[in-house]
Image 1 (cartoon, one colour):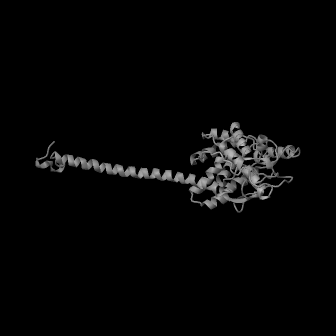
Image 2 (cartoon, helix red, strand yellow):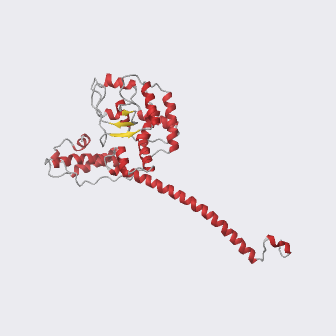
Image 3 (tube, rainbow, N blue to C red):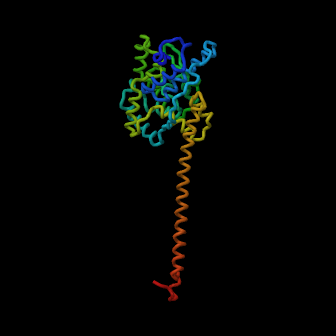
Length: 331
């Protein structure tokens, strides 16, 4: 709304018209926003006006008939199995080179992300209380403002419980044993936690938005360095989540189950991943079919050549080699 007001002015909300929405779209385009970003902003703004209609504060939504910018369908980027192995190896090497007091344990956070499809903010706001070692699960929970934790809210859906493997549980056990006592967050380095707790929060410089975006400094820069080391094309940490979701589909999980585990608020979001994996399955089926047909065609072609040679031999009165002994054959 601040962005919207910055464009149309701080006018009475009852005076907002469709023209204001169209002006906002053009302003966002001129600013360089993508069409997908603009459409997302408009959906949020339209929702607020819909609430005003529902509460009888407006007769109708002024943006009800606005034409949303149409963005082309984006390809869902995922990491291949080979790329995942290289990324995990590079993350292990990168982690060993940095002070554990100040740096994220990258090999662990990437492994957990691949296993659970947790978002970056969900991982960085995960506490040891969210990990059930005996049950081998990790829970995504909102956090309240306490003396030890800061407020954080889950995107889209309510809290959810995700499975861990025995190997990952052991990695978490080893990581907890190496952490100083009294630090509640699983993936926040102790030095960063101390700075947030002792400097930023007391000065009122820590907001709800910061708990989503600024938990760890230089997160993207460090991840980019890991990708470079792994010789993997530059992508985002969120693509690890996409990889995990696609992997669930590829291994036969239902759309409802994946939607529940991924924490999607709408079925449409989950369905995009399903279609992407389905497209990949079609491609792989095409490759397998092509290979099978190729073998059949090679076999068929060999027989065709043999038949052609037999016909040619017959037309020239050629005799089989085992009949040459009767003296009637030709060289």
